Image (cartoon, rainbow, N blue to C red; front, side):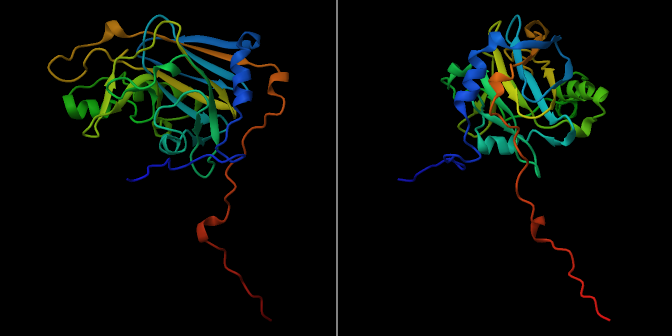
Amino acid sequence: MSTVEAAYRPTAGGALEVDRAFYQRLAATHNQHKLVDSFEIPIRSGRAWKVPQGHICRLVTIDGPQVADLNVWNAHDPRERMWAARTRQLQRAHVSTFDRLWSTLPFLRPLVTVTHDTLSGYGVDGDGGRVHDLLGTRCDPYVNRMLTGENFDFHCHSNLVRAVLPYGLTEFDVHDVLNVFQCTGLTDEDRYFMKACPARPGDFFEFFAELDLLCALSTCPGGDLSVPMWGPDARDPLDVCHPIGVEVYQPSHDLLRGWQPPERAAYDTMHGLRAPQWQHTR
């Protein structure tokens, strides 16, 4: 019988270990945090905003189920951004409370830690579906045109592109996403599938900013994904689209006592490259 183990397993005091008591404390004292920003992202649109380090950001399904695509960057250096593939390996393919979203090389550190998730109890459904996935990526107008021959400018990729332009970023900065509130999995044929979003009004996904962050979110044009977007039964799912609420909170200094922002990766040996060692002769 073969033994299957996780690719990366946290060790006591290691880089993957999470101080659960600290993040549980932040979640449990939510009513003590100061609300510093709040807005709604309308259907089929996107918006970017900043979350200072040590703050908490909450994404809320305001009046009905809605899938949303999240991008995250270091607010001071957008070359450091969420790395979906490595996060799948270091954490898992569907994230929830105490999981982290990790950044790209050469930084490799947690950008956020999930502090509260009202869908954490969803677990695994009868089809193998789970929520908040890193398996897929954003819908985009390029694939849409390739498959349908039609142009549509409000896919999640386009929504994110428009959202980041005011911050000096471009289409090249938009990256693979966390599909918040989305229920997905893999079939027996190892094919990606999507199901109707299980969120209800008032459900939320909340995370702690380990660094100063720029975040961007798209409200997917597929809404809650209960309506087929491909095949003979496909139609415009406009009636199942809902806005997403965004709230940013500042915890008290006392709650953050002992917390330190993560350092960038310690590796600095230049991948085996070395500068020439010149010998001075007279």
